[in-house]
Amino acid sequence: MPAIKKLPILAAIPRSGTWFLRYAVSFLIHLDRGGRIEDRLTGEVVGRPSGTPFDFRRFKGGPLFLTQRSMPAEHLFIGHTVCPGFADSVDDHGWWARTGFHVPGYDYLHEGLNYPYTPIDLAAEVEYTPLSVRTLDRAAAAGRSAPMALVYRNPLAQAASYYCYCISHPSPTYNRVDGQPLARVPFRDYLFGKALPSYAKQFISFQTMAARHRGLVRLVPYERLIERPAEILADLLNHLQGTSRCDWRNLHHAVRLARREHLKAIEAELGRSLDGTRATNVSHIRSGRFEKTLHGGLREDVIQRLQWMGVDTDLLVWSAVGNRDYIPRQKEHVAAE
Image (cartoon, rainbow, N blue to C red):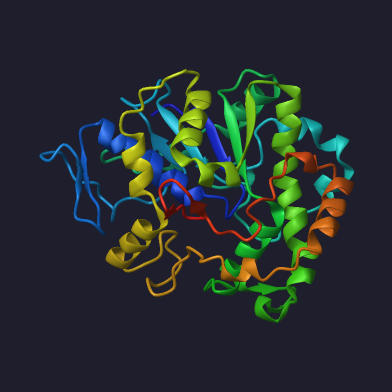
């Protein structure tokens, strides 16, 4: 099987809607192929009644997805990564190379994984496919890659959500920091010592590449996605596939099926969290209660720190610091991760 050398990339900063994007896009593709999905909360059957049901137990969440019959490109990446091609710009940001991500997983494409066996979903019986990261990087550096996009959340809400996620994670790689339980680390220390450097490290790679190759790389606030999920997701897919479609006939169904309450019902059915790290009674989908308690005075300190690292803070959207994840028109919730 030949390695994938050109790949649209839909990246997200952790806790910025990754699993919503993965499920919404996968539901869309499945429905476009004539499949059916039963809403676990309402019992409604969406799609062709005689179609193949969505296989939730086989679904792993990518990071690669076979998109044939829905999109021009054959594959799509949805996950966490530094922007391909950015390595040529590292010298412009002296702190970047000296700063590590505080946990694994921020940069799937550059963590030295077994890329000849990259997990792929929605590909019938195929579970892995080869991926040439070196080719992706070279093409992106030259401005010849497939389109790319980053969904990013305001850094205060992102850090608060990831703080809670890591505290309840079963692995000490996540639930401990500098030799002590993360639960004993004051949030402010975690925010400025761990979360913001990791956030800036991923964000600035896309910011830099978007400036270098205008039109190729797009930055999309998570807060806009949760306000208008179907509209923003359609715009993202149009960008990634190089189309101007307005006939995503199954997109509204897919977005509704990927609402937070429904994903939690799927977790209960599977007996595990969507990310596979914990039992169903400890979902990885957060409620946002902790974020609502954050003092607004942190914002200015966060902005100053990010500006020092070169982040264009004018791109941040702060309207959802409380992380209500509220969609006024649908009165439903989008999963944060």
